[in-house]
Length: 399
Ligand code: COA
Ligand code: ZN
Image 1: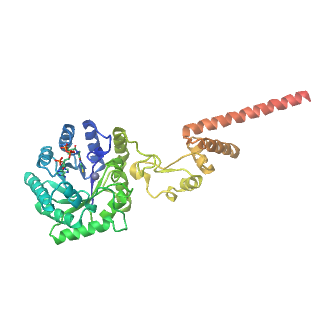
Image 2: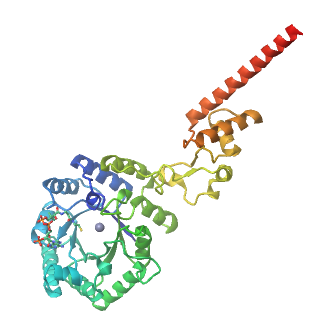
Image 3: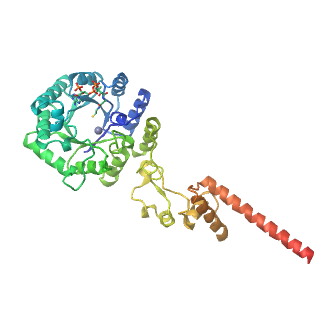
């Protein structure tokens, strides 16, 4: 069964400018735990004393999720992480030829380093989940990755993460994550190594979620994600989008409390300084809002005509917006919801015209403004009847 690793607190803090206070980090960890993610990656403890403290704090909270930390292939990084009491440790080292030459090291030297660090961590904590990530996996030389990963598993790593560090993969091409994961599992099995495969997909080409699902279909059992897709450059897989696809399309609807997502997103959005974009799937303001007249007319009768995901799964509702794209059906529906039923056709038409006029100014008419429009038009109508009556009386008096 697929596990979700949330890295909002680790990769998310690699978003330029994002830094959560520790009281916010614990609140985010609690909220992620309520949603039901399996692993919470909390940070790289040697980076700052505050992160060290946060990892410790979260690991001691007794959450259901496994609490993880990040470490370079450096013994001090491992020691500091393990002192925090984590149950999961992510150890990384890139084995591409270009990085090896940058470090002036041979593949053998680097693999010796990785295996000694992995087996050291294993000795310190026998029940630790140890993930080894050959950073930039998919662009690294294949034989380097397979050798390093197999050796890491033999040294005690349970998880190998396929990192698309630069968002390089494209589904259905010779850069397919599906093919990569399949081939890697086979190549490792041939070396008698059977790790859990994780996928860490960056969004540089806007394909992070597609690639992660490709990896999952090929047998990856851990998928990394962050709230809002926070992370380096264009970020990572967005957690809510990922959970929605797994729940709605891959039959895993009972795994997570999806109704808790809006609260989690509001929290992360507020303290990361990144507003949830209105167009964001699932959590964005417009994600379940119908606009064009033809859509709203059909969606009022049955929302499924224009939506393939039920908003109530996420504690949300369908709505419609009123602007220059509206038609009579949308306006009647909105009038009904403010208690203005059975208006005559002329007045309803006038309301629609005002809505379109306002929409053309680049504004959406909300229900509050709709009340003002209606009151205004009703007053205008009374005024015009009164003045017509006066004019008539005047004409009669003069005749
Ligand atoms: N394993 C072992 N060493 C690694 C490594 C790895 N996977 N990746 C990088 N390194 C080494 C580099 O070679 C370099 O060391 P060197 O200068 O002796 O060659 C060092 O780590 C990184 O350079 P730099 O940042 O200048 O070193 P630093 O000692 O000032 O700080 C950190 C190290 C980790 C504390 C600092 O880079 C940091 O705060 N990083 C934020 C977290 C991060 O980078 N995460 C990456 C997630 S993929
Ligand atoms: Zn990353």
